[in-house]
Length: 356
Image (cartoon, rainbow, N blue to C red):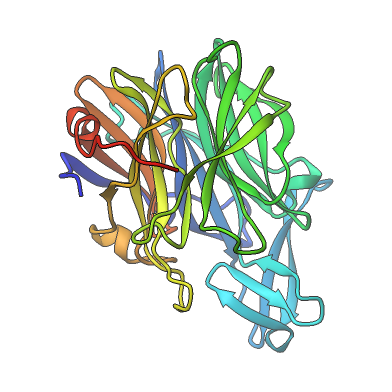
C-alpha cells in the first residue's frame, strides 16, 4: 500500500442542494477531473433518492425525459427483493431497479485540494439510454476538447456514452459508444499509431473467467473495435471485480492507470471492499503490460469506511502536480475525496512484469 501525502473529504451530500424539492441528495461521488487554464474542473456524480417515505412502499426514481424531471414509481415492499443498498429486484419480472438516480454537476477548484463556492451547474439525463441516470464520468483532454465518458443507465442496462465540451459551460452529447453491459471506459489522451484507444469493462453474465479489463481502438472516438482482453483480476484484493479507474496519463515509464478492484469472494455475502491498484502500459503498444496487480489504496479514512456502501475508495480522476498525483475518488459511494501520492513511488514500485 502507498503512503498518502495528503487525503481529505472534498464534498459530501449535505454540501449540495437537491435538483428538485421532493428529492434528497444521498451521494456526491465518483468524479471526473481535469486541469484547465482556469483551474481544475470536477464533474461529480450526484445521487438522489425520494424525500418522501411511505410505510410499506419503496420509491424507485427515474427521469421523465419530456418533463425534464425525476418521477417516482412506488412499489410495495412485498413486490421487491432487496439485492443490496443500491438495487432491488421486482419479483414478478426478475428485473432490477436502482434505489436512487444520478445526474452530473460541474464543480471547480483553484488548487485541486479544496472546492470553490459556485453556482451549481446540473447536467440532467436527456437521452432514452439515460432514464435511470448518469453515472461515474471520466474526463480526458483530446484534440483540443474535453471528452467525457459516463455510464448511461436505463431499462436496457448500463451502457457507456460520450459527451464533449470546450469550456464545461456547453456540452455536446454523442450517445452510447459501448452497449450494455459495459462500464469503466477511460480514454487515452492522444492517438497511438493513428488510433484512439480506450480501456473498458464488459460485464459478463457467465463466469467463464475472472473479471477483466479490455482494450479497444477507434478511428474517431465513436466507433470502437479490435477488442481484446488486457488484464485479469488476481486472487486477492481484486478477485470480485476489476475495472479502469482514472484515464491513463503519459509518464517516463509508460501509460499509468489507477484501476479499481473489489475483494468479494464467490460465496461471500455483502458487497465487499473496493480498493485501487496500479497498471503500467507500454507507450507505443498499450496492449503490453509493464506492471500490474499491486494494490496502492485501500479504505482507511473514516469517510471511506462508513457511508451508503461502506469500505469503498473508487478512483475516477487524476491530476499531475510536479512530483505528485492528485487522485479523485468516490468514498463509500457517498462523498468525493482526494488522495495525493508520490509519482516516483508509483512508478518505481512493483516494476516486475505482469501477465494478463
